[in-house]
Amino acid sequence: MPSAVPQPIQFLAANVHAPAAATAAVITFAAGGAGVCHVVRGIVASYSAAPAAGNLKIEDGAGVTVFSVDIPGAGVVEIPLFGKGSPNTELIITLASGGGAVVGKVNVLAHWTDAP
Image (cartoon, rainbow, N blue to C red; front, side, top):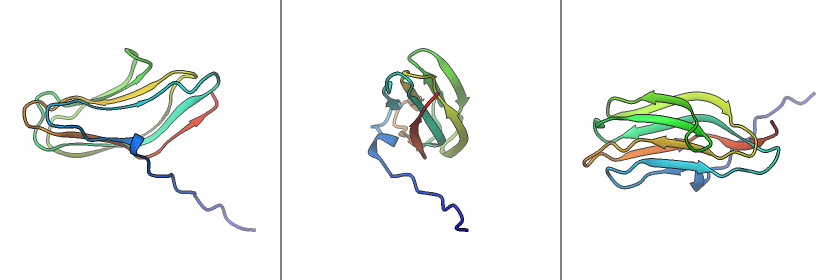
């Protein structure tokens, strides 16, 4: 009997945002329609130097924060979450602006859509 071989997730430009200094890094997955939910597995974020007010949040629809964590220092942070948004709702992942000359980057390691 053959064993199940995990299938890789395709790298997509939509799963990364690396803007200029002093700019929030935002990844938005648009609402997928009735009966479609966004699934995210793992996020990696970084700041080039200590941010003024580092934070990563996930919104299940604009203004509905479902996850928030402060990131106080420079470097790379891996967040090993595995979560699903609400049906027909955009999912917004935001790494707050680091301020000044600080560059922030955010990457979603895996994203796909699923039924509720």
